[in-house]
Image (cartoon, rainbow, N blue to C red; front, side):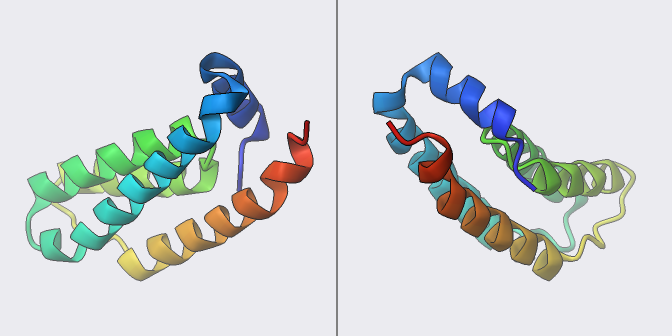
Length: 110
């Protein structure tokens, strides 16, 4: 679920000392955006915009599976289809975040 190569790249780009703060900010923004999805269930352009943001944020932090699901939902929304399973997306994000938090310190221990 997590692209650890991307995580390592981002960590190297911004520096290990700032990575935790940036990662936490990404995670908070993703959760805020996930919470807005239900309100966009009948608004394809808004759904497309929210999923585009989620896709980019997830990809940036290495949440590959979440990004893939958001990409498909974004493409569907662009065609007027807003039937993405928000509960499944939220569950996938939760599992990805748990994996990220459980393994990050092991992989990047100083």
